[in-house]
Image (cartoon, rainbow, N blue to C red; front, top):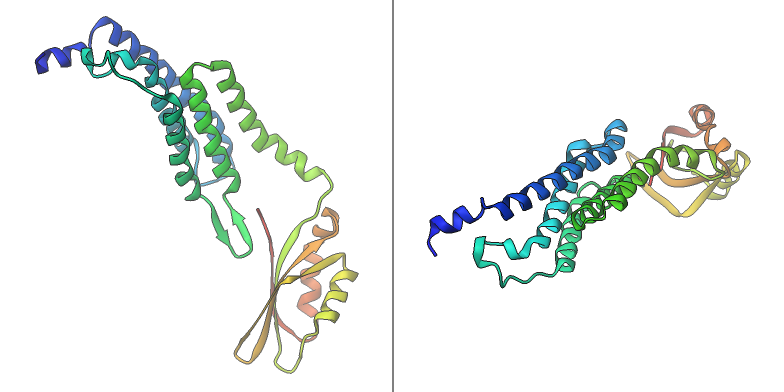
Length: 246
């Protein structure tokens, strides 16, 4: 068999039908990936519609071609063997490295967890689409988009607590007391997490950094009032209050 016959085999009837079938899967994967990615794009995240569309198409392509093993490599692939589960494992492992790249630690906050989870999910959408479970792929894509938008609003309305990262810089002549600071925080509806306390010195001034947990969301909403009190508190030279996000 010469090179010409091998190349022409890729344009025969069976191969063209297979290519058209795979092409439709890729188009559907692009649309479903963009559907999930739109929510991230709307929220201003780094990974948007293009990233999700590419991930979903890649997962679909690497899965669907396994169904055409007899057509691989032109006419010489009649003896080709494949194991779709190994392909799926490789896809999900590769997506894991991509997801790790969008997770960032900013102080006590960890950002990108939802984006990473949704990228991993959209890869599963591509796998389902590739093996022919079209309804399941569409349902998973829709549920993923809904869970990142509608469930976020529901989560905010449910009872819960929030966490703040507080940094206080004291004047040199004032020695802070952890018990007094804890009592002051408790009087305002917050609890200091003892194991989060980090003490440092800069220019002869003690700097305390710690996390506080609010009793409820209503208390967390009083963050501007807490800032006003700290601004006028005796012995505090400067401060910062940052919400801790996961």
